[in-house]
Image (cartoon, rainbow, N blue to C red; front, side, top):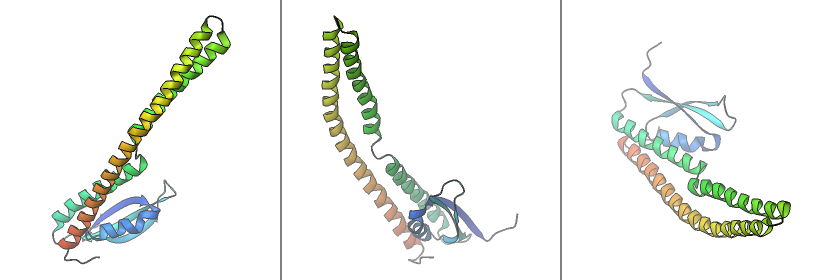
Length: 175
C-alpha cells in the first residue's frame, strides 16, 4: 500500500442530499474527490473525500466531524421513524381492540343462542375501547409530533453550529 499525503473518507448518502452533505464536509476541510453510485441501493451514492494529513486544527475538526455525523444520523433516524411510540402502540392495541370486536361479532352471529348477548357485549366493549383508544392515540401523536419537531430543531442547530465552528477553525475558507 502506497503512502498517501491525505486522509480519505467515504460516506454513503441519499442522492438528493449529496450537495448538502458535500457542503457540510467541505466546511470541515474535506474536498470531494469522487462520487459513485451505490452498488446496493439505487437512490444512494458513495462520496469520497480527501483532506491533507497536516491540516491545521485537525483534532478539533475531527471532533466536529463526530458531532456532524451524530447530527446527520439523528436526522436520518428521525426521518425514518418520526413517531415510533405512536406507531407501535397504535398498531398493537388497534389490532387487539379490532380483534375483540371481530370476536364478539363472530360469537354473536356464528354461535348465537346464549352467546348472543355475550358476543354483542364483547363487540361493544371492543368498539368503545377502539374509539376511546383512538382519541388517546391522537393526543399521544400530537405530543410525540411536538417532541419530534423540538428534536429536529435541536439537531439542525447542532449541525449549523458544527458547520460554523468548522469554518471558523479553517479561517472561513471553504474547500
